[in-house]
Image 1: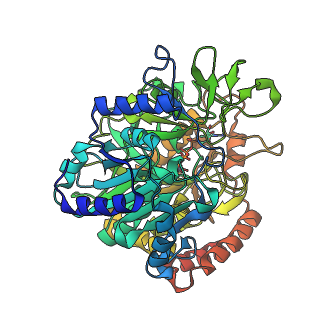
Image 2: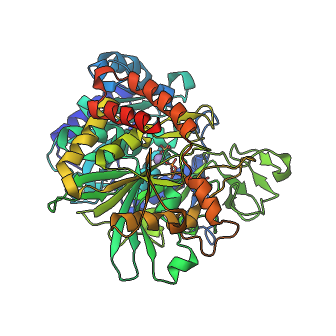
Image 3: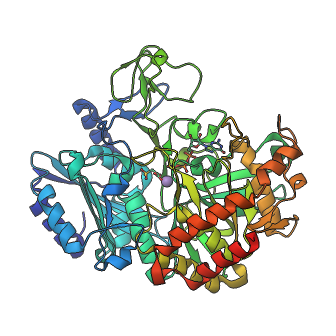
Length: 587
Ligand code: GTP
Ligand code: SPV
Ligand code: MN
Protein backbone atom coordinates (compact mmCIF):
# COMPACT_ATOMS: atom_id res chain seq x y z
CA UNK A 1 0.00 0.00 0.00
CA UNK A 2 3.02 2.30 0.29
CA UNK A 3 6.54 2.65 -1.06
CA UNK A 4 7.64 4.75 1.93
CA UNK A 5 10.91 3.04 2.84
CA UNK A 6 10.87 4.31 6.43
CA UNK A 7 7.49 2.70 7.04
CA UNK A 8 8.47 -0.49 5.25
CA UNK A 9 11.77 -0.98 7.07
CA UNK A 10 10.16 -0.33 10.46
CA UNK A 11 7.45 -2.82 9.57
CA UNK A 12 10.06 -5.44 8.67
CA UNK A 13 11.50 -5.04 12.17
CA UNK A 14 8.14 -5.40 13.88
CA UNK A 15 7.23 -8.47 11.83
CA UNK A 16 10.58 -10.08 12.68
CA UNK A 17 9.94 -9.36 16.35
CA UNK A 18 6.25 -10.27 16.71
CA UNK A 19 6.23 -13.12 14.17
CA UNK A 20 2.58 -12.87 13.04
CA UNK A 21 1.10 -15.54 10.77
CA UNK A 22 -0.19 -12.84 8.49
CA UNK A 23 0.17 -9.10 7.89
CA UNK A 24 -2.88 -7.09 6.78
CA UNK A 25 -2.72 -3.45 5.74
CA UNK A 26 -5.78 -1.48 6.74
CA UNK A 27 -6.86 0.58 3.75
CA UNK A 28 -9.96 1.98 5.43
CA UNK A 29 -12.40 0.56 2.87
CA UNK A 30 -15.92 -0.34 4.00
CA UNK A 31 -15.56 -3.87 2.66
CA UNK A 32 -12.40 -4.54 4.65
CA UNK A 33 -13.79 -3.06 7.86
CA UNK A 34 -17.05 -5.00 7.54
CA UNK A 35 -15.13 -8.24 7.04
CA UNK A 36 -13.22 -7.48 10.26
CA UNK A 37 -16.43 -6.75 12.19
CA UNK A 38 -17.87 -10.05 11.00
CA UNK A 39 -14.70 -11.89 11.96
CA UNK A 40 -14.67 -10.30 15.44
CA UNK A 41 -18.29 -11.38 15.93
CA UNK A 42 -17.53 -14.93 14.84
CA UNK A 43 -14.78 -15.25 17.46
CA UNK A 44 -16.79 -13.53 20.23
CA UNK A 45 -14.44 -10.54 20.41
CA UNK A 46 -17.41 -8.34 19.50
CA UNK A 47 -21.15 -8.76 19.62
CA UNK A 48 -23.47 -7.32 16.98
CA UNK A 49 -26.33 -5.30 18.49
CA UNK A 50 -29.94 -4.81 17.30
CA UNK A 51 -29.65 -3.57 13.71
CA UNK A 52 -33.03 -1.76 13.79
CA UNK A 53 -32.44 0.07 17.07
CA UNK A 54 -28.66 0.47 16.93
CA UNK A 55 -27.56 0.11 13.30
CA UNK A 56 -23.91 -0.74 12.83
CA UNK A 57 -23.31 -0.93 16.59
CA UNK A 58 -21.29 -3.50 18.51
CA UNK A 59 -20.50 -4.48 22.09
CA UNK A 60 -17.06 -5.45 23.33
CA UNK A 61 -16.03 -6.67 26.78
CA UNK A 62 -12.46 -6.27 27.92
CA UNK A 63 -10.68 -8.60 30.29
CA UNK A 64 -11.99 -7.74 33.79
CA UNK A 65 -8.46 -6.81 34.86
CA UNK A 66 -8.10 -4.39 31.95
CA UNK A 67 -10.72 -1.66 32.21
CA UNK A 68 -8.89 1.68 32.42
CA UNK A 69 -5.60 3.43 31.80
CA UNK A 70 -2.81 2.14 34.03
CA UNK A 71 -0.72 5.11 35.10
CA UNK A 72 1.73 3.07 37.20
CA UNK A 73 2.67 1.07 34.10
CA UNK A 74 2.93 4.05 31.77
CA UNK A 75 6.46 5.30 31.12
CA UNK A 76 8.21 8.18 29.42
CA UNK A 77 11.47 6.75 28.07
CA UNK A 78 13.57 9.80 27.34
CA UNK A 79 17.36 9.46 27.30
CA UNK A 80 17.68 11.63 30.40
CA UNK A 81 15.55 11.02 33.47
CA UNK A 82 15.20 14.73 34.11
CA UNK A 83 13.48 15.11 30.71
CA UNK A 84 10.63 12.89 31.93
CA UNK A 85 10.46 14.93 35.13
CA UNK A 86 9.17 14.21 38.63
CA UNK A 87 5.54 13.55 37.61
CA UNK A 88 6.23 10.77 35.09
CA UNK A 89 7.46 7.20 35.46
CA UNK A 90 10.78 6.99 33.64
CA UNK A 91 12.76 4.19 32.12
CA UNK A 92 15.92 4.57 30.04
CA UNK A 93 15.15 3.80 26.37
CA UNK A 94 17.60 0.85 26.10
CA UNK A 95 16.23 -0.61 29.32
CA UNK A 96 12.63 -0.25 28.15
CA UNK A 97 13.30 -1.74 24.74
CA UNK A 98 15.21 -4.60 26.37
CA UNK A 99 12.40 -5.24 28.86
CA UNK A 100 9.60 -5.14 26.29
CA UNK A 101 11.31 -6.92 23.39
CA UNK A 102 10.87 -10.39 24.96
CA UNK A 103 7.20 -9.58 25.65
CA UNK A 104 6.66 -8.80 21.95
CA UNK A 105 8.89 -11.63 20.74
CA UNK A 106 6.58 -14.10 18.97
CA UNK A 107 3.53 -12.46 20.61
CA UNK A 108 1.64 -12.53 17.29
CA UNK A 109 2.32 -16.19 16.42
CA UNK A 110 -0.98 -17.65 15.24
CA UNK A 111 -2.39 -14.13 14.92
CA UNK A 112 -2.77 -11.50 12.24
CA UNK A 113 -0.82 -8.25 12.42
CA UNK A 114 -2.88 -5.27 11.31
CA UNK A 115 -1.05 -2.21 10.01
CA UNK A 116 -3.10 0.95 10.55
CA UNK A 117 -1.89 4.17 8.94
CA UNK A 118 -3.77 7.08 10.48
CA UNK A 119 -3.81 10.86 10.52
CA UNK A 120 -4.41 12.93 13.64
CA UNK A 121 -6.19 16.07 12.46
CA UNK A 122 -7.99 16.86 9.21
CA UNK A 123 -6.28 15.48 6.09
CA UNK A 124 -4.22 18.27 4.57
CA UNK A 125 -4.19 20.45 7.69
CA UNK A 126 -0.92 22.15 8.66
CA UNK A 127 -1.66 20.92 12.22
CA UNK A 128 -2.01 17.25 11.25
CA UNK A 129 0.42 14.44 11.92
CA UNK A 130 0.59 10.85 10.76
CA UNK A 131 1.04 7.69 12.79
CA UNK A 132 1.18 4.02 11.96
CA UNK A 133 -0.12 1.58 14.56
CA UNK A 134 0.65 -2.09 14.31
CA UNK A 135 -1.66 -4.28 16.41
CA UNK A 136 -3.00 -7.80 16.82
CA UNK A 137 -6.43 -6.54 17.91
CA UNK A 138 -9.41 -6.14 15.57
CA UNK A 139 -11.05 -4.08 18.34
CA UNK A 140 -8.18 -1.60 18.03
CA UNK A 141 -8.55 -1.46 14.24
CA UNK A 142 -12.28 -0.76 14.46
CA UNK A 143 -11.86 1.86 17.18
CA UNK A 144 -9.06 3.58 15.27
CA UNK A 145 -11.42 3.70 12.28
CA UNK A 146 -13.86 5.76 14.34
CA UNK A 147 -11.32 7.82 16.28
CA UNK A 148 -8.97 8.82 13.44
CA UNK A 149 -8.81 9.50 9.72
CA UNK A 150 -7.21 6.22 8.73
CA UNK A 151 -6.25 4.02 5.83
CA UNK A 152 -4.93 5.05 2.45
CA UNK A 153 -5.65 8.77 2.94
CA UNK A 154 -3.17 8.83 5.85
CA UNK A 155 -0.40 7.19 3.81
CA UNK A 156 -1.04 9.65 0.98
CA UNK A 157 -0.64 12.48 3.47
CA UNK A 158 2.65 10.97 4.74
CA UNK A 159 4.16 10.47 1.26
CA UNK A 160 7.87 9.57 1.51
CA UNK A 161 8.37 11.36 4.81
CA UNK A 162 9.96 9.78 7.87
CA UNK A 163 7.84 12.01 10.14
CA UNK A 164 5.40 9.49 11.57
CA UNK A 165 4.83 8.00 14.99
CA UNK A 166 5.65 4.32 15.18
CA UNK A 167 3.11 2.58 17.40
CA UNK A 168 3.50 -1.07 18.28
CA UNK A 169 0.74 -2.78 20.21
CA UNK A 170 0.12 -6.39 21.16
CA UNK A 171 -2.47 -7.80 23.53
CA UNK A 172 0.12 -10.54 24.09
CA UNK A 173 -1.31 -12.53 27.05
CA UNK A 174 -2.98 -9.59 28.88
CA UNK A 175 -0.73 -10.42 31.84
CA UNK A 176 -1.25 -7.50 34.26
CA UNK A 177 2.34 -7.85 35.48
CA UNK A 178 3.66 -7.64 31.93
CA UNK A 179 1.60 -4.60 31.01
CA UNK A 180 3.65 -1.63 29.78
CA UNK A 181 2.78 1.52 27.90
CA UNK A 182 6.13 3.03 26.95
CA UNK A 183 6.71 6.26 25.08
CA UNK A 184 9.98 7.13 23.38
CA UNK A 185 9.52 10.82 22.50
CA UNK A 186 13.00 11.11 20.99
CA UNK A 187 12.31 8.14 18.69
CA UNK A 188 8.72 9.03 17.73
CA UNK A 189 7.83 5.59 19.09
CA UNK A 190 5.20 3.99 21.37
CA UNK A 191 5.25 0.38 22.59
CA UNK A 192 2.16 -0.95 24.37
CA UNK A 193 1.84 -4.55 25.48
CA UNK A 194 -0.55 -6.76 27.49
CA UNK A 195 -3.57 -4.47 27.42
CA UNK A 196 -6.68 -4.26 25.24
CA UNK A 197 -8.25 -1.16 26.79
CA UNK A 198 -8.88 2.30 25.29
CA UNK A 199 -6.24 4.80 26.26
CA UNK A 200 -3.63 2.05 26.64
CA UNK A 201 -4.03 0.73 23.11
CA UNK A 202 -5.64 3.31 20.81
CA UNK A 203 -2.18 4.74 20.33
CA UNK A 204 -3.33 7.79 18.37
CA UNK A 205 -5.15 9.14 21.40
CA UNK A 206 -3.41 9.80 24.72
CA UNK A 207 -0.10 8.16 23.71
CA UNK A 208 0.45 10.13 20.49
CA UNK A 209 -1.94 13.10 20.52
CA UNK A 210 -0.92 14.09 24.06
CA UNK A 211 2.30 12.44 25.31
CA UNK A 212 4.33 12.41 22.07
CA UNK A 213 2.60 15.49 20.64
CA UNK A 214 3.19 17.60 23.76
CA UNK A 215 6.91 16.90 23.34
CA UNK A 216 6.76 17.72 19.61
CA UNK A 217 4.79 20.86 20.40
CA UNK A 218 7.45 22.10 22.80
CA UNK A 219 10.15 21.62 20.15
CA UNK A 220 8.07 23.00 17.28
CA UNK A 221 6.30 25.89 19.04
CA UNK A 222 2.74 24.59 19.42
CA UNK A 223 0.66 22.92 22.15
CA UNK A 224 -1.08 19.57 22.63
CA UNK A 225 -3.64 19.78 25.42
CA UNK A 226 -6.24 17.59 27.18
CA UNK A 227 -8.96 20.02 26.12
CA UNK A 228 -12.39 20.05 24.58
CA UNK A 229 -13.14 22.71 21.96
CA UNK A 230 -16.59 24.29 21.67
CA UNK A 231 -18.11 27.18 19.76
CA UNK A 232 -20.82 29.44 21.14
CA UNK A 233 -22.93 31.05 18.45
CA UNK A 234 -24.46 34.31 19.62
CA UNK A 235 -27.86 35.54 18.37
CA UNK A 236 -26.17 37.70 15.73
CA UNK A 237 -24.51 34.61 14.21
CA UNK A 238 -20.99 35.29 15.50
CA UNK A 239 -19.20 32.19 16.91
CA UNK A 240 -16.66 32.39 19.73
CA UNK A 241 -14.52 29.38 20.64
CA UNK A 242 -13.55 28.14 24.09
CA UNK A 243 -11.20 25.29 25.02
CA UNK A 244 -11.37 23.59 28.40
CA UNK A 245 -9.07 21.19 30.23
CA UNK A 246 -10.67 18.97 32.88
CA UNK A 247 -9.13 15.71 34.15
CA UNK A 248 -10.47 12.38 32.90
CA UNK A 249 -14.17 11.81 33.65
CA UNK A 250 -14.62 15.41 34.87
CA UNK A 251 -17.00 16.68 32.22
CA UNK A 252 -15.25 17.50 28.91
CA UNK A 253 -17.56 15.46 26.67
CA UNK A 254 -20.57 16.88 28.48
CA UNK A 255 -19.49 20.51 28.21
CA UNK A 256 -18.31 20.14 24.61
CA UNK A 257 -21.81 19.35 23.34
CA UNK A 258 -24.06 20.99 25.92
CA UNK A 259 -27.61 22.00 25.13
CA UNK A 260 -28.17 25.58 26.29
CA UNK A 261 -31.02 26.23 28.73
CA UNK A 262 -34.29 27.52 27.29
CA UNK A 263 -33.53 31.16 28.16
CA UNK A 264 -30.48 31.10 25.89
CA UNK A 265 -32.03 28.92 23.18
CA UNK A 266 -34.92 31.29 22.69
CA UNK A 267 -32.52 34.21 22.31
CA UNK A 268 -30.76 32.27 19.53
CA UNK A 269 -27.64 30.95 21.28
CA UNK A 270 -26.22 27.67 19.95
CA UNK A 271 -23.32 25.49 21.05
CA UNK A 272 -21.15 23.71 18.46
CA UNK A 273 -18.81 20.86 19.34
CA UNK A 274 -15.39 20.84 17.70
CA UNK A 275 -13.78 18.30 20.04
CA UNK A 276 -14.34 16.58 23.38
CA UNK A 277 -10.91 15.48 24.62
CA UNK A 278 -7.82 16.78 22.85
CA UNK A 279 -6.83 20.09 21.26
CA UNK A 280 -3.77 20.93 19.19
CA UNK A 281 -3.13 24.66 19.29
CA UNK A 282 -0.97 26.93 17.17
CA UNK A 283 -0.44 30.61 16.63
CA UNK A 284 -2.20 31.48 13.37
CA UNK A 285 -1.19 33.95 10.65
CA UNK A 286 -3.35 36.58 12.37
CA UNK A 287 -1.43 36.21 15.64
CA UNK A 288 -4.30 34.56 17.49
CA UNK A 289 -4.25 31.02 18.92
CA UNK A 290 -6.03 28.48 16.69
CA UNK A 291 -7.19 24.99 17.66
CA UNK A 292 -7.99 21.74 15.91
CA UNK A 293 -9.37 18.51 17.28
CA UNK A 294 -6.93 15.82 16.14
CA UNK A 295 -9.54 13.09 16.63
CA UNK A 296 -12.47 11.98 14.47
CA UNK A 297 -14.64 10.36 17.14
CA UNK A 298 -15.57 10.39 20.81
CA UNK A 299 -14.33 7.78 23.28
CA UNK A 300 -16.82 8.86 25.90
CA UNK A 301 -17.80 7.76 29.41
CA UNK A 302 -21.11 5.85 29.18
CA UNK A 303 -22.43 5.98 32.79
CA UNK A 304 -24.40 9.14 33.42
CA UNK A 305 -24.97 9.80 29.72
CA UNK A 306 -28.71 10.19 29.11
CA UNK A 307 -31.30 12.09 27.12
CA UNK A 308 -31.32 14.87 29.71
CA UNK A 309 -27.65 15.17 30.78
CA UNK A 310 -26.14 14.87 27.30
CA UNK A 311 -28.67 14.27 24.49
CA UNK A 312 -26.06 15.04 21.82
CA UNK A 313 -23.67 12.37 23.10
CA UNK A 314 -26.50 9.87 23.34
CA UNK A 315 -27.60 10.68 19.78
CA UNK A 316 -23.99 10.21 18.64
CA UNK A 317 -24.09 6.62 19.89
CA UNK A 318 -27.22 5.51 18.01
CA UNK A 319 -25.30 4.20 14.99
CA UNK A 320 -21.85 3.01 13.98
CA UNK A 321 -20.76 2.90 17.62
CA UNK A 322 -18.69 0.42 19.61
CA UNK A 323 -19.72 0.04 23.26
CA UNK A 324 -17.17 -1.28 25.74
CA UNK A 325 -18.03 -2.86 29.11
CA UNK A 326 -21.72 -1.88 29.28
CA UNK A 327 -24.81 -3.99 30.07
CA UNK A 328 -26.32 -6.16 27.31
CA UNK A 329 -30.13 -6.25 27.31
CA UNK A 330 -30.94 -9.79 26.21
CA UNK A 331 -34.58 -9.05 25.41
CA UNK A 332 -33.93 -6.64 22.58
CA UNK A 333 -30.16 -6.93 22.06
CA UNK A 334 -29.45 -3.31 23.01
CA UNK A 335 -27.18 -1.76 25.65
CA UNK A 336 -27.71 -0.10 29.02
CA UNK A 337 -25.62 1.62 31.68
CA UNK A 338 -26.16 3.25 35.07
CA UNK A 339 -27.74 6.66 34.58
CA UNK A 340 -29.14 5.94 31.09
CA UNK A 341 -32.71 5.73 32.39
CA UNK A 342 -34.63 4.37 35.34
CA UNK A 343 -35.48 1.07 33.59
CA UNK A 344 -32.54 -1.30 33.91
CA UNK A 345 -33.19 -4.43 31.86
CA UNK A 346 -34.33 -7.42 33.90
CA UNK A 347 -32.98 -9.97 31.46
CA UNK A 348 -29.41 -8.87 30.99
CA UNK A 349 -25.68 -9.56 31.13
CA UNK A 350 -23.35 -7.28 33.08
CA UNK A 351 -20.09 -5.84 31.73
CA UNK A 352 -18.29 -9.07 32.52
CA UNK A 353 -20.85 -11.10 30.53
CA UNK A 354 -22.49 -12.66 33.61
CA UNK A 355 -26.23 -12.81 34.21
CA UNK A 356 -27.12 -9.59 36.00
CA UNK A 357 -29.91 -8.73 38.41
CA UNK A 358 -30.51 -4.95 38.55
CA UNK A 359 -31.78 -5.35 42.13
CA UNK A 360 -28.57 -7.02 43.29
CA UNK A 361 -26.93 -3.72 44.20
CA UNK A 362 -24.03 -4.58 41.85
CA UNK A 363 -23.30 -2.19 38.99
CA UNK A 364 -24.16 -3.59 35.56
CA UNK A 365 -21.84 -1.41 33.52
CA UNK A 366 -18.25 -0.71 34.54
CA UNK A 367 -17.91 2.87 35.91
CA UNK A 368 -15.36 3.50 33.12
CA UNK A 369 -17.44 1.81 30.40
CA UNK A 370 -17.28 3.78 27.17
CA UNK A 371 -18.76 4.39 23.75
CA UNK A 372 -16.66 4.95 20.63
CA UNK A 373 -18.83 7.09 18.37
CA UNK A 374 -18.11 8.93 15.10
CA UNK A 375 -17.99 12.70 15.65
CA UNK A 376 -20.08 13.25 12.52
CA UNK A 377 -22.99 11.55 14.32
CA UNK A 378 -23.16 14.43 16.79
CA UNK A 379 -26.18 16.68 16.10
CA UNK A 380 -24.18 19.76 17.18
CA UNK A 381 -20.89 18.92 15.46
CA UNK A 382 -19.31 22.19 14.38
CA UNK A 383 -19.31 23.13 10.68
CA UNK A 384 -15.60 23.85 11.32
CA UNK A 385 -14.87 20.31 12.53
CA UNK A 386 -12.93 19.46 9.36
CA UNK A 387 -11.54 22.93 8.76
CA UNK A 388 -7.79 22.44 8.24
CA UNK A 389 -7.12 25.89 9.74
CA UNK A 390 -8.99 25.09 12.96
CA UNK A 391 -10.86 27.70 15.00
CA UNK A 392 -9.63 30.83 16.83
CA UNK A 393 -9.68 30.54 20.62
CA UNK A 394 -11.12 33.35 22.76
CA UNK A 395 -10.91 31.69 26.19
CA UNK A 396 -9.20 28.74 27.83
CA UNK A 397 -10.76 27.14 30.88
CA UNK A 398 -9.28 24.85 33.51
CA UNK A 399 -11.34 22.87 35.98
CA UNK A 400 -11.60 19.84 38.18
CA UNK A 401 -13.67 18.06 40.79
CA UNK A 402 -13.33 19.94 44.06
CA UNK A 403 -15.90 19.45 46.79
CA UNK A 404 -14.82 22.71 48.46
CA UNK A 405 -11.95 25.21 47.77
CA UNK A 406 -12.41 26.09 44.06
CA UNK A 407 -15.28 28.48 43.29
CA UNK A 408 -17.79 27.95 40.46
CA UNK A 409 -15.71 30.19 38.20
CA UNK A 410 -12.89 32.70 38.36
CA UNK A 411 -10.72 34.51 35.87
CA UNK A 412 -6.96 34.82 36.04
CA UNK A 413 -5.43 38.29 36.28
CA UNK A 414 -3.44 37.75 33.07
CA UNK A 415 -1.81 35.00 30.97
CA UNK A 416 1.04 34.23 33.38
CA UNK A 417 -1.33 34.08 36.31
CA UNK A 418 -3.54 31.85 34.13
CA UNK A 419 -0.63 29.47 33.62
CA UNK A 420 -0.25 29.44 37.40
CA UNK A 421 -3.97 28.69 37.78
CA UNK A 422 -3.62 25.75 35.37
CA UNK A 423 -0.50 24.49 37.10
CA UNK A 424 -2.22 24.35 40.51
CA UNK A 425 -5.28 22.45 39.30
CA UNK A 426 -6.40 19.68 41.59
CA UNK A 427 -9.17 17.15 41.24
CA UNK A 428 -10.64 14.04 42.80
CA UNK A 429 -9.51 10.89 40.99
CA UNK A 430 -12.05 8.97 38.87
CA UNK A 431 -12.54 5.49 37.40
CA UNK A 432 -10.83 6.55 34.13
CA UNK A 433 -7.54 5.31 35.58
CA UNK A 434 -6.86 2.20 37.68
CA UNK A 435 -6.53 3.00 41.40
CA UNK A 436 -8.42 4.75 44.19
CA UNK A 437 -11.37 6.97 43.25
CA UNK A 438 -12.25 10.28 44.96
CA UNK A 439 -8.80 11.19 46.23
CA UNK A 440 -7.78 14.82 45.61
CA UNK A 441 -4.54 15.05 43.69
CA UNK A 442 -2.83 17.89 41.88
CA UNK A 443 -3.33 17.49 38.15
CA UNK A 444 -1.71 20.45 36.39
CA UNK A 445 -3.61 21.46 33.25
CA UNK A 446 -5.35 18.00 33.46
CA UNK A 447 -2.08 16.76 31.93
CA UNK A 448 -0.55 14.90 34.91
CA UNK A 449 -0.93 11.49 33.20
CA UNK A 450 -0.39 12.86 29.68
CA UNK A 451 2.58 15.25 29.59
CA UNK A 452 5.35 13.57 27.58
CA UNK A 453 8.21 15.55 29.13
CA UNK A 454 9.23 17.44 32.25
CA UNK A 455 6.18 19.31 33.51
CA UNK A 456 8.46 22.19 34.58
CA UNK A 457 9.55 22.63 30.95
CA UNK A 458 5.91 22.27 29.93
CA UNK A 459 4.93 25.18 32.18
CA UNK A 460 7.77 27.23 30.71
CA UNK A 461 6.42 26.40 27.25
CA UNK A 462 3.01 27.76 28.30
CA UNK A 463 4.67 30.95 29.56
CA UNK A 464 6.61 31.26 26.30
CA UNK A 465 3.46 30.79 24.22
CA UNK A 466 1.87 33.66 26.16
CA UNK A 467 4.79 35.91 25.34
CA UNK A 468 4.49 34.89 21.70
CA UNK A 469 0.75 35.62 21.57
CA UNK A 470 0.97 38.88 23.51
CA UNK A 471 -2.31 40.77 23.77
CA UNK A 472 -3.94 38.32 21.34
CA UNK A 473 -3.63 35.49 23.87
CA UNK A 474 -6.90 33.89 24.99
CA UNK A 475 -8.17 34.83 28.46
CA UNK A 476 -7.75 32.09 31.07
CA UNK A 477 -10.44 30.93 33.53
CA UNK A 478 -11.05 28.18 36.08
CA UNK A 479 -14.37 26.43 36.78
CA UNK A 480 -15.66 23.87 39.27
CA UNK A 481 -19.05 22.22 38.68
CA UNK A 482 -18.55 19.87 41.63
CA UNK A 483 -18.85 21.86 44.88
CA UNK A 484 -20.92 19.88 47.37
CA UNK A 485 -23.12 20.77 50.32
CA UNK A 486 -22.79 19.27 53.81
CA UNK A 487 -24.70 16.16 52.67
CA UNK A 488 -22.30 15.68 49.76
CA UNK A 489 -24.79 16.72 47.05
CA UNK A 490 -23.63 18.82 44.11
CA UNK A 491 -24.84 22.40 44.64
CA UNK A 492 -24.56 23.56 41.03
CA UNK A 493 -26.96 21.87 38.55
CA UNK A 494 -24.21 21.50 35.94
CA UNK A 495 -24.55 20.03 32.45
CA UNK A 496 -26.56 22.36 30.13
CA UNK A 497 -26.72 24.98 32.87
CA UNK A 498 -22.95 25.34 32.65
CA UNK A 499 -23.84 27.60 29.70
CA UNK A 500 -24.68 30.24 32.29
CA UNK A 501 -21.05 30.27 33.38
CA UNK A 502 -19.72 30.15 29.81
CA UNK A 503 -21.83 33.22 29.08
CA UNK A 504 -20.08 35.15 31.87
CA UNK A 505 -16.74 33.95 30.50
CA UNK A 506 -17.57 35.24 27.00
CA UNK A 507 -18.87 38.51 28.40
CA UNK A 508 -15.58 38.95 30.28
CA UNK A 509 -13.63 38.31 27.07
CA UNK A 510 -15.61 41.08 25.42
CA UNK A 511 -15.30 43.45 28.36
CA UNK A 512 -19.06 43.28 28.93
CA UNK A 513 -19.20 41.83 32.46
CA UNK A 514 -18.03 43.10 35.80
CA UNK A 515 -16.01 41.15 38.34
CA UNK A 516 -14.84 41.20 41.93
CA UNK A 517 -11.12 40.97 42.66
CA UNK A 518 -10.20 38.24 45.18
CA UNK A 519 -6.82 36.82 46.25
CA UNK A 520 -7.15 34.01 43.67
CA UNK A 521 -8.47 36.00 40.71
CA UNK A 522 -11.61 37.73 39.44
CA UNK A 523 -14.92 36.16 40.41
CA UNK A 524 -18.31 37.22 39.01
CA UNK A 525 -20.73 39.41 40.89
CA UNK A 526 -23.32 36.85 42.01
CA UNK A 527 -26.10 38.74 40.16
CA UNK A 528 -24.16 38.40 36.91
CA UNK A 529 -24.64 34.62 36.76
CA UNK A 530 -28.05 34.27 35.13
CA UNK A 531 -30.25 31.97 37.25
CA UNK A 532 -33.53 32.56 35.39
CA UNK A 533 -35.42 29.27 35.09
CA UNK A 534 -33.28 27.42 37.63
CA UNK A 535 -35.18 25.59 40.37
CA UNK A 536 -33.86 25.99 43.89
CA UNK A 537 -30.90 28.18 42.94
CA UNK A 538 -30.91 31.71 44.36
CA UNK A 539 -28.45 34.58 44.28
CA UNK A 540 -27.35 33.37 47.71
CA UNK A 541 -26.61 29.91 46.29
CA UNK A 542 -24.39 31.58 43.70
CA UNK A 543 -22.73 33.70 46.40
CA UNK A 544 -21.91 30.49 48.26
CA UNK A 545 -20.56 28.86 45.11
CA UNK A 546 -18.32 31.85 44.45
CA UNK A 547 -16.94 32.09 47.98
CA UNK A 548 -13.17 32.04 48.35
CA UNK A 549 -12.33 30.51 51.73
CA UNK A 550 -8.95 31.92 52.74
CA UNK A 551 -8.18 29.12 55.20
CA UNK A 552 -8.82 26.41 52.61
CA UNK A 553 -6.73 28.34 50.09
CA UNK A 554 -3.88 28.69 52.60
CA UNK A 555 -3.89 24.90 52.98
CA UNK A 556 -3.97 24.60 49.21
CA UNK A 557 -1.02 26.97 48.88
CA UNK A 558 1.01 24.62 51.12
CA UNK A 559 0.16 21.66 48.91
CA UNK A 560 1.12 23.70 45.83
CA UNK A 561 4.49 24.42 47.49
CA UNK A 562 4.97 20.66 47.89
CA UNK A 563 4.18 20.08 44.22
CA UNK A 564 6.49 22.87 43.08
CA UNK A 565 9.33 21.68 45.33
CA UNK A 566 9.57 18.48 43.28
CA UNK A 567 10.73 20.45 40.23
CA UNK A 568 13.91 22.00 41.63
CA UNK A 569 15.38 24.43 39.11
CA UNK A 570 12.96 23.22 36.43
CA UNK A 571 10.24 25.25 38.14
CA UNK A 572 9.84 28.46 36.12
CA UNK A 573 10.75 31.47 38.27
CA UNK A 574 7.56 33.13 37.14
CA UNK A 575 5.46 30.39 38.76
CA UNK A 576 7.42 30.53 42.01
CA UNK A 577 6.75 34.28 42.02
CA UNK A 578 3.06 33.69 41.31
CA UNK A 579 2.83 31.34 44.30
CA UNK A 580 4.54 33.88 46.55
CA UNK A 581 2.14 36.54 45.32
CA UNK A 582 -0.87 34.29 46.04
CA UNK A 583 0.39 33.62 49.56
CA UNK A 584 0.89 37.33 50.11
CA UNK A 585 -2.62 38.12 48.91
CA UNK A 586 -4.05 35.44 51.19
CA UNK A 587 -2.22 37.10 54.09
P1 GTP B 1 -12.67 11.56 29.72
O1 GTP B 1 -13.29 11.00 28.49
O2 GTP B 1 -12.27 10.50 30.69
O3 GTP B 1 -11.54 12.49 29.43
O4 GTP B 1 -13.84 12.33 30.55
P2 GTP B 1 -14.59 13.71 30.32
O5 GTP B 1 -13.80 14.82 30.92
O6 GTP B 1 -15.01 13.87 28.90
O7 GTP B 1 -15.89 13.55 31.25
P3 GTP B 1 -17.43 13.33 30.86
O8 GTP B 1 -18.02 14.53 30.17
O9 GTP B 1 -17.58 12.04 30.18
O10 GTP B 1 -18.10 13.27 32.31
C1 GTP B 1 -17.70 12.32 33.26
C2 GTP B 1 -18.71 12.19 34.35
O11 GTP B 1 -18.94 13.46 34.95
C3 GTP B 1 -20.06 11.69 33.86
O12 GTP B 1 -20.53 10.72 34.74
C4 GTP B 1 -20.93 12.90 33.87
O13 GTP B 1 -22.27 12.59 34.11
C5 GTP B 1 -20.33 13.76 34.99
N1 GTP B 1 -20.52 15.21 34.71
C6 GTP B 1 -20.19 15.85 33.57
N2 GTP B 1 -20.52 17.17 33.63
C7 GTP B 1 -21.06 17.36 34.85
C8 GTP B 1 -21.59 18.51 35.53
O14 GTP B 1 -21.64 19.62 35.01
N3 GTP B 1 -22.03 18.32 36.80
C9 GTP B 1 -21.98 17.09 37.40
N4 GTP B 1 -22.44 16.99 38.65
N5 GTP B 1 -21.51 15.98 36.80
C10 GTP B 1 -21.05 16.11 35.54
C1 SPV C 1 -9.23 9.67 29.65
O1 SPV C 1 -9.01 8.82 30.53
O2 SPV C 1 -8.92 10.88 29.78
C2 SPV C 1 -9.93 9.28 28.41
C3 SPV C 1 -10.12 7.85 28.16
O3 SPV C 1 -10.28 10.13 27.60
S1 SPV C 1 -8.67 7.08 27.60
O4 SPV C 1 -8.69 7.04 26.14
O5 SPV C 1 -8.68 5.71 28.13
O6 SPV C 1 -7.52 7.81 28.03
MN1 MN D 1 -9.75 12.27 28.33
